Image 1 (cartoon, rainbow, N blue to C red):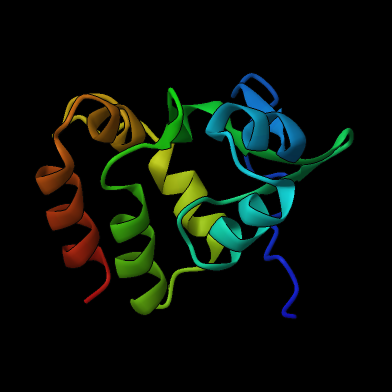
Image 2: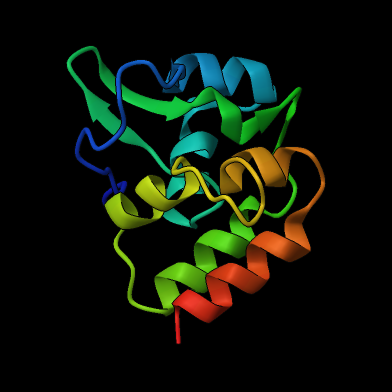
Amino acid sequence: MSETPVASAVLSDAVPALPVAEVAAQLEVPVSRVHQLIRDGHLLAVKRSDGLVVPSDFLDGTVVVKGLPGTVTVLRDGGFTDEEILRWLFAEDGSLPGTPIAALRSNRGREVKRRAQAMAI
């Protein structure tokens, strides 16, 4: 089994995040499935002092935010590290406006994916 990819603590502690066990409970899946989602790029995890966490903005009720897995895949395929992807997802972008993750959460995935594709070239 491959190791779960974990980004260093690139996000501010002000970005709300949930421990993997809480993510599993919210998604109504086993913890092992959350680790698989992280390995597959459907979610990204961050190492913090309190352990492995997933930004809570990546979840929409009992599902992963629509468009997040595709965006992560585009950026990874373009050579971006998980740390760089996390920074970009939570960085203000005046052309959206807001952050890419906020745009994904408000169903503007096409705009986000276009920007990700342009960056990955």
